[in-house]
Image (cartoon, rainbow, N blue to C red):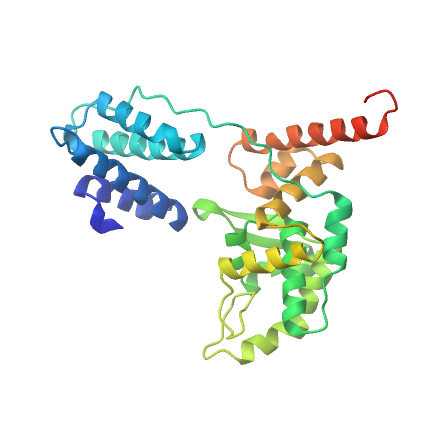
Length: 301
């Protein structure tokens, strides 16, 4: 992807990667976004470059995106452009910032998918644990819901991160930010059972021993794609189509809120840098309350 970028964009991407410690996923997304923007500039008449683009070029680029792209994706693309020009101004590579007055589009607030507590319990209780692979998969599902982890955080867990007897995991979150996540109850029991009784079987198959908690059939670190497949197949067992790992994270947060947990505590556990990200779960909770009311009250229909 770097080959499609000019020196200006590449310098900004390197700044994000090296100095800001931005995650690889964000780096890849921003690289694609800036490459797309540069392709647009080259198609202008006359063609433009990063250091010759004007405000109207960015406005026209944004207009071209609107017919076929979600507002959240447009926001990310505009954020990448605004961040790059802010960086180039600071570095002295451009004299004027054409993106300075460009507003970020407001993405539509889509309430996250959430499973009910009954469905979560059915999902987890029905999972088999008679084989090493089954026990690993059960531990994955229990930890995703029991700790509210992102897939990348689950895959990044190492044995030294697991202080199960003390009731916590050390989670390596977005942007290189570590945090503590509580773990107890069934999630702790199943994770410990997997580490002690199933993981050694996977580890023996490895050419080189790994510190990763969750291992694949060859003893290497389990990939995000594999976790997605495990979650999807587990959902199908209770007739939930295309179950996504993030649905378990959303369900965790919503059920914590409904159970009386403080919003700030949920923010810290989930690793949200901004409380506004966590506040969406108050809307989910209120939506759930309304559904319960409409279903139960005799004169609400």
